[in-house]
Picture (cartoon, rainbow, N blue to C red):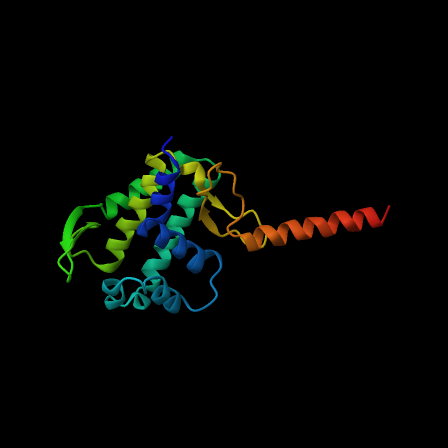
Length: 189
């Protein structure tokens, strides 16, 4: 299995970060209108902002639901189902690597069809990033938070791969609740 540097690289890839944000913020725990969520998710990318992601709510929400199915399958160890769903997404929006020159003269490698519309480009980027996690043997690192009232998706980048919660906050809440239950049970004895 590739080392820690590789899992970090795959988990921090733009497509993986966006896939997790779409699933978490549009599907699992939406806290504001979907158009606002999309504007925030893509605020880091001027090209995406110019495409007005808030006007693509229906299509991006559909993508988020499909990505959630991928993450759920990976969480329970059904890599075949996750791979099958990702293959469908990649067939619809194939990753077509190409070099793009930025305004400052540097080149960067893009992984979506050239001149692809917003939804097609992000479908390609998210599907490819999640497929790389599977292809590099990291499907077992994609999870849903173990806190009953959370369930947010995350990629476990810890060295030993045993993370169960999306954040320390969720972990602390669950541990504090368990401690309170134990103390209450002891007090009843």
